[in-house]
Length: 308
Image 1 (tube, rainbow, N blue to C red):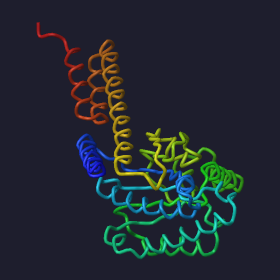
Image 2 (tube, helix red, strand yellow; image 1 turned 120 degrees about the horizontal axis):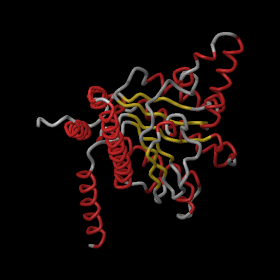
Image 3 (cartoon, rainbow, N blue to C red; image 1 turned 180 degrees about the vertical axis):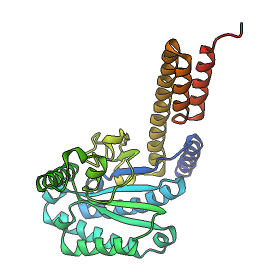
């Protein structure tokens, strides 16, 4: 009876969260932490935790589809993970290999147009995993309804360092002028084709750090970050919705700040020249949500001379 009541309460809370959400982020990145601790607390081994976490990954893909998220990046294996003992590392490679083949052949992946991409220093992975990576990317090439990025042998510092070295070498060879170095040149040298900036980072397992994950696409975009206590195998749709709520709150705060700055600019311009204030207001309206544009219009109206 108590289990049934708890289940109904959770369903009700999930519906409440869904009603509160107005928009979903385009790109969510997840640090899937806590698999080993989950297994240890259940007298299991690390591979048991990783297998349980793989089930959560499949659920998250469904939630993204339901909510309209366009891109998901999963931190599956970091460069630091190479330091783990072989008896833990090899079963994880086996699991990653199997899941790549499974996802690449799944009807739902092809029916939904999911493109699978791998980010990282793939050359460091075992041959069998590299072959699975090539298979998954080849099987889903050209799909763009949803993008699934899997970070394997990934390290954010290593990614940026590699891009910097590549740019330095191009300048040294005379293939690139220093003045031509821009965002596009850097992104072209990252691990994969340019992806969307990250809107929301989620980390499970209780640690409050982003672990060198996607520094160019997340930190550069000032992505919202949601830390939660459940281990990855325990991560629920409610946890996911709470993360999206965090993103939404950040977006609302940014919109409010942009509107306040726009109103202040119009007010300052009007003190000097009303025509300039009208021009500033015109440029700002297209950059603001409807409510912000209305506030700019109201401020401009206040600055107009009275008919008297």
